[in-house]
Length: 337
Image 1 (spheres, rainbow, N blue to C red):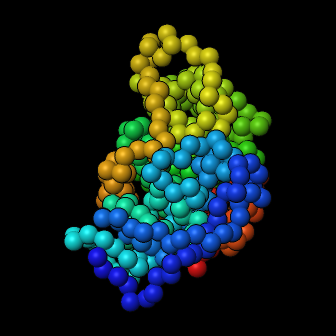
Image 2 (spheres, rainbow, N blue to C red; image 1 turned 45 degrees about the horizontal axis):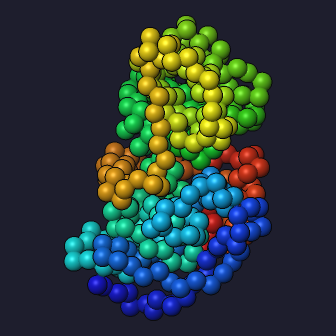
Image 3 (cartoon, rainbow, N blue to C red; image 1 turned 180 degrees about the vertical axis):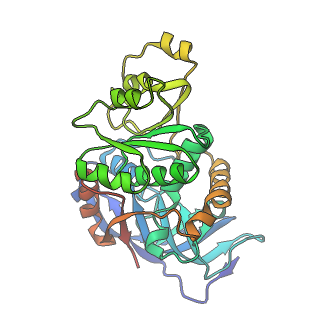
């Protein structure tokens, strides 16, 4: 084991969920600083990303894996202060961003070394905190599971969200023809500025009809959907022959009525995933693939996280309220240290 010359405190400030429910139930508390296991790294957290699963966990609607921290927070940036294991590609003092198995809303977090990524050159800690959960979710679902290819057409729901703005930039950069949905004209304009050919205001337009009209009834090759519910059948109406529908959240509900005969006739694929319950080894594969394929573009400024607002750790409840309100474009983050 290597240890930092800096003293690691026995206790730390963190945000805990006092009881399931409203945002005000997020409370600042004192917790023991995590003890790391073999092949783990202890990070002194600078910033933590705020994501939809954090809200679901706070509400009691997102089951925490048995081996995970009960504290919210799935992505951070910070400095390595301790590591355990004889072989490591990181050193004490390295600036990193990391995918967390929970526990990111705290001054220190223990993470598997394989879930750490070097800070992209030229990136601030604030920007880097927006990468791990968001970019890996998009990369693993849109490109690995959804197999999006150059020159294919893709529809991205929730285009103004952290996931949406990331997916649009990545898909556009890798040569896809990008369409999106968002909940206001202002959001649609912002989404088009970052790479969508056309963004549809879902409050005023039927996106499936708009897609079919623009594609001469051929539809799009891939759809990245975080709504589910009644969107499933609507998605299938504008999904092409051999198209792939990838569901990453169920904000609109878990049920819909679907004509499976049409799925068979058009040879469509309906799939989906959620990141947190997946094995550590699989997450490491995603991390390695993301760094290999995307890091260079991040460092050259061709793709960049969009930050809506920064909150102090102690104001985590306000960050949750802002995310739930839904007026944002991009990400909310928490400043920890």
